[in-house]
Length: 246
Image 1: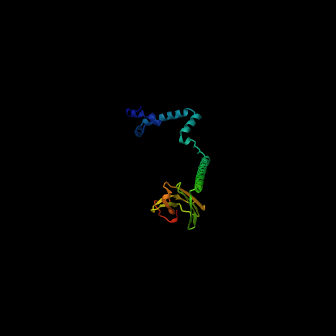
Image 2 (image 1 turned 90 degrees about the vertical axis):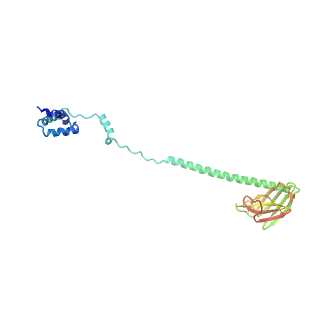
Image 3 (image 1 turned 135 degrees about the vertical axis):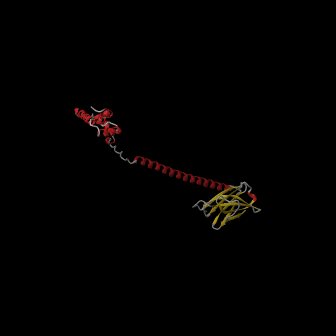
């Protein structure tokens, strides 16, 4: 029979035989077993009983459903997911190209419409100027003065009754966008008043321009044309093209 000093170790032998004993208690029990005569026999007996229990029942295979659940939980049992096939976004590219094409077409159409509007405005202005010149020519009180100066020829029409002057010029040189022609009316004291600005049409040999003045034309003695910066000047500063006394 085991000695009383073995009583505390005998309680731990069953757990030790099954491998379920705490590490510290297992170490103390192993030290005791090396010095005790009876406890090793107890441990051997428990091991025989444990082995008999393990072999008493035939081995059983786990259910297939349980095995599958365990495999899904284990990282090694999880099936690797196949990567999704890379699909090139042809539809998105086609849609983007169609939108870009529509934008380009709309911009092109807008530019064409703006160009047509400018041409239409220019044609309307030319027609109105021509009608005004014809009206001045039709006035019975209109005076006509010839213009000859440095290759430029034409006529100055003057209607003092309606305070209207008109220039009809041939071969007036075109100007860059930074310059313009400016007409000046000069009174008997030499004071100059701007009658207006005008530019010859590109590629057109004939230039016509009508000026309406608020002052009485009878107070002026001459009309001259100079080259001035775009937007005009408050007084003549550029080259004079011609001057007509009347």
